[in-house]
Image 1 (tube, helix red, strand yellow):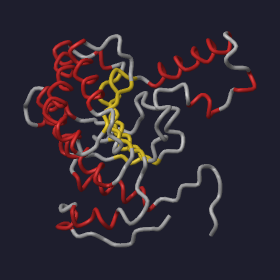
Image 2 (cartoon, helix red, strand yellow; image 1 turned 135 degrees about the vertical axis):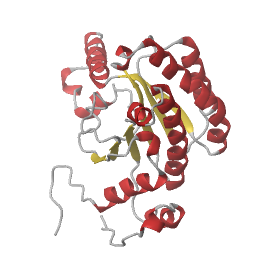
Image 3 (cartoon, rainbow, N blue to C red; image 1 turned 90 degrees about the vertical axis):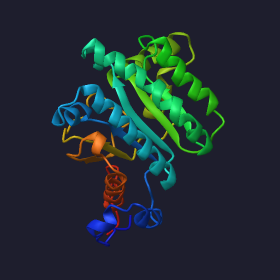
Length: 260
C-alpha cells in the first residue's frame, strides 16, 4: 500500500473537499465500522440532558454517511444500540428507540436519491414495534439500491451473534445439511449477521475509549483500528478523512509477510 506523504495544513484539514479526490486515488476501506461513543459526555460538558447528545450525534451520522458514500466505501456499519444498552434508564432507552424514526423519516429521501441501501443487524424481538417499522420501511424502500450499505447494529451483541451461529450450525448438522468436514471459518462466517458483507477494513471508535464493547468480535480479526478522543457529536468529515488516511498509510499483512 502506498504511503501518503503530503502534510495538510490546518486550513486544508477543515475543508474535506480539498482532500477527497486525492484520498480516492488510493484504496479506501471497503467496509468501515464505527462505535459511536461520547454522546452523553458531550451533553454533560454543556450541562444538557444526555438525550441532547444523542440527538446531536444523529446529525453526525448524516454527515459521515454522506462522506463515506462519496468516498466509494461499500458498507458502513454503525453501532447504534447494544444488547447491554437496555441497562440504561428507561427514559434514555425510550428516546434512543425513537431516533431511528426521526433519522430515517427526514433522511430517507436523500438515502434513496444517493443510492444508499439501509440494512440492520441485531435481535429484533426486543425492539419496539414503532422502531422496527421505521427501519424495515427504510430497508424496503432502499432494497433496490446498489451503492453504500448503511448497516445499523441495533440491539446487537457479538457474543449473542456468535452463539446463535453455533446453534444454527448444530441444528443444520443434526438435520444432515452439514457434516463435520464442512466446518470452516468461511462457513461459520455465513452463519453470522454480516454474511453478505466483507469484514470491516477499518474500525473507528470515538470518545477516547479503547475497547470493542462486544462489537463484531469475529469480523474484526484483521481490521485496522483507529481511536480518537473526539466525542461522536463533534466528529467531523475531517476526522473521518484522517482515519481513512491513517488506514491508507498502514501495511496490512493478515499474519503474513510483505515484500521489502
